[in-house]
Image 1 (spheres, rainbow, N blue to C red):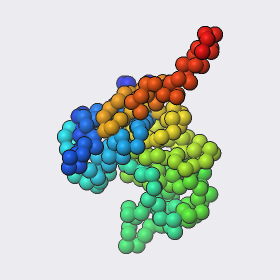
Image 2: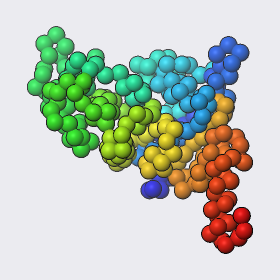
Image 3: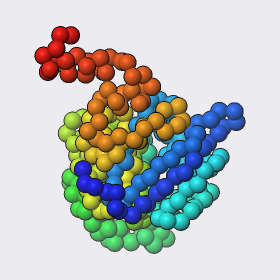
Image 4: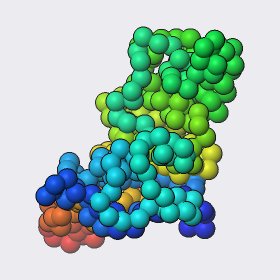
Length: 265
């Protein structure tokens, strides 16, 4: 992965906490994302990943902590504030209308001349976005219902690029996809990074994370529990995610290491 340490910091979180009554969903979360960098956010169910994404998307207001975006401290009062700043989110369900075509989905709620639709300009803009992503979609007039899972993810990401964001968050982008479609989406993430955008990817699939991430941030029980590079071992990642250093993955790694050294098991 490319060295991103000298690039502009797009997003910086310091001490972000979120409480729902007596329940602490997030506690003192620190996170930094730079331009042209993919940061993977991993953790077990209930680790706080979805809550953190909703805080960044303006759905939830943090209870404590500060958020800095492109060098300025910001406060989000709703999703429209996040979009206006340049924070786009593609949730796991994609929020696409299957009965509408690709153009209508990309411009849904952002139609050009809504009282007399400028279909030609919208179609040209849709093709431009999809071509920039090297998308494999036969026609922008195809109903979304006829597209594959990977193609639907492409449409959702193209829609998020419509407002020229600086940061895109992808929630489980490869969930329930086949091998070929997963590879297509991972290529898509790399093309988004090549545009100079900051990318946050939430995933349970460690192989997908290693394939595209520059850094891997682990959350456990609503707290930071380590930052890793993609070449970190499975034992290290699983230990950070589960909080258990002694598990089947670590024991298997130890056995393999001993076998390679010729030591008795």
